Image (cartoon, rainbow, N blue to C red; front, side, top):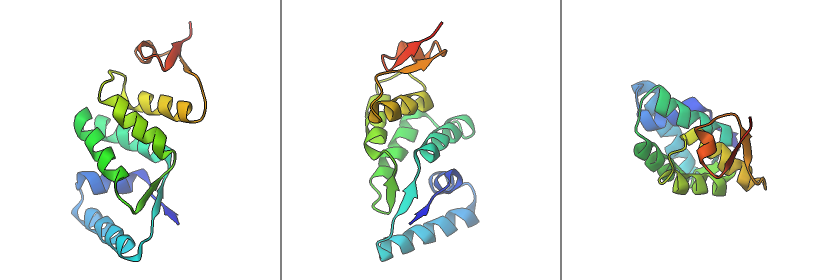
Length: 132
């Protein structure tokens, strides 16, 4: 199994580079035909969130819709998929920044009770505990 880097998901979602977008589309179509899968590390999802928000200034709901659609693609196998699904569900209702919320859901998925933080904004979520 091959893993995907952040730039692959970003090109696929944003389609801002025609050559690269077509290349990844062809690769995905071939994987679908061959019934192959690609591994998507959790850190790639986190980076994708950050890039879509910070670089492309895509709205939160559009980002969550895109992640939802990626989760439905049979050629993509996500690390901590249930944590990502929980993240997408709760993010629609939460004011917590998307990357912070994904970190929290990943931690909860791994058996943690709470995430310690110095981030006052993140600490407004019950998933975080403010230090200091």
